[in-house]
Image (cartoon, rainbow, N blue to C red; front, side, top):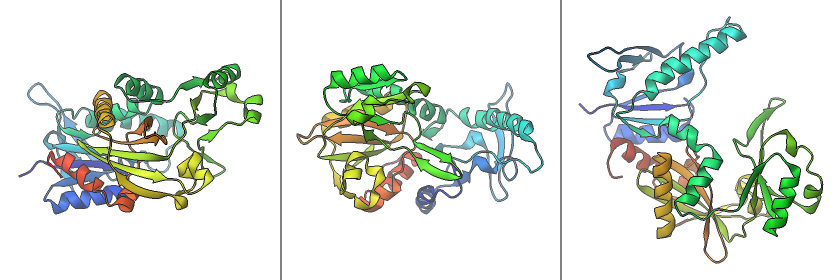
Length: 323
């Protein structure tokens, strides 16, 4: 019997539903779990001794899997642990730490199976300074970048660049304020912004030289397969940051230049990622400039817009086969 594939993702993540459906249709045995199910509807009993590595059971109400039997793991933004009502704050924090070290430790100890991608590698790759340093080393073009909490350094950087600069979040651009989900978008700084940099000293900020562009590219990589799609902005806001106005965007499947494809392969190999969604700016003269690589990036909307078989490629990578 074929070894099972473990899928770790939020219960309501419908792009993962598509991957699971394809795997099931191909005859794969799939055990899907969400860390939010632990400990109330996901149980574990796993042991190790001198004779054998970690073996035992991860079990839900309907399925059971032995971690030692798992052939591959698809890891995609699972939920936070949910503990029983009645636990106070300190108890929840303590229980959360134990769950991360216990369940998380068991999962990350599964180092003999195929990961798409391993959470330790994903966590490191989330750091934009790491991405940019590695991208530069492997031959990808990057924009001049400054990370600082000094207002004077921002002005010096802008003077040195000699053109527009853009401010971007370094970490996740999403936060909650007043029970509302908000997003911080990239934006070009005006002369007025540079004159008043109040608040820069409160935390780290990232600034880059603005790159003129004909369009942008979302390059989705699953295993050894690459799916490039041009993203054309239909509004001024989308031209500055296309996430601000999805309704104005148009997409077109395209090819990745060989030198860029080679650099991306080296980048993901160095970052130990088997999946990533990368963003590039393409200049009016056709030069590709690397912006970032998201190890858990969204892909379903662009697969729908372009017809690119990204879900099939993820499933194939998990099965160790060609799509």
